[in-house]
Length: 361
Image 1 (cartoon, rainbow, N blue to C red):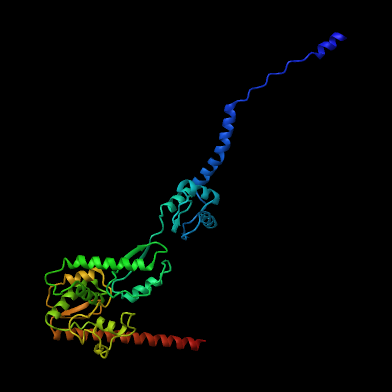
Image 2: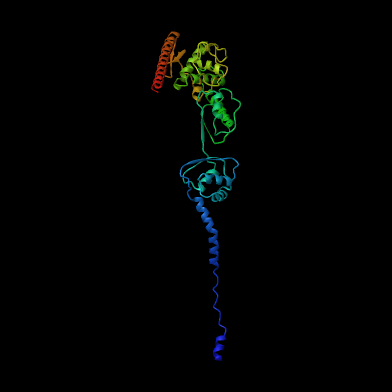
């Protein structure tokens, strides 16, 4: 019995402990570190939720967190936090303000790159040839995507009509500056290439001539050089230009269209712009002519026409003497008379229709 007890009381050797694997611990730590990074990378590269293209304006001074919320609220990104991390990693928190067009399924990474590079929407402001400075300023001031207000009207003829590109929020004055530089450069370039037959003494006189040509040929641009030739022939023969648009400008001062037809009394309007009562050119341009009109003023068509009148098609009938001119004027008056009769008939028919409807009620 004692021997059995002693045997039982003997100390049993402990099982050897397993040594911990340091590589396993490192792997676990790396996995714990890499997992959120992988998740973030996936979130940044994953296509976004946007189904249709959408334009968003990012105002100046907006914080990264505010931009993230803005895009999230508009359904462009999945994760605002991922966007903030991406902005730090990919753009050093430097994103440009502007108007951006986000495309369907655009990822956070693509959105960040777009705003980091400032690839904002390019807008276009188109100015038609022949508008006055008042009219152009009105168009600019009524464009809601521009900033600032133009209070001073630029000198007539100093703005080149063309299409100008800009970004949302650009200052209106900056576009005026570009239009003026473009007109100055264009006039200088074309003046240097003027025809030897041009009798004008300065680029400013060419600009004035071009403005009258522009207003006379608004509907049929192909006639510009021919109209220019008429005006040069009249100036050479000491004849007054007798251009209706100069009378209209004398009445409106370029602040808008004349809401009626010219009358014989209008032709006697006392104004230095009225070429029916004054010889030579008007003192200043009567609109802002385009490049083609300036070219016509400096490269006139050579011919012996000294009269022209509207022909009813948007163009003009050109004649060499007063007798032929008066015949063309008679034809034009007949066209006007027929149009007036048509208008009267249409008005009468409308009034009859209205009376029938009243009776039917």
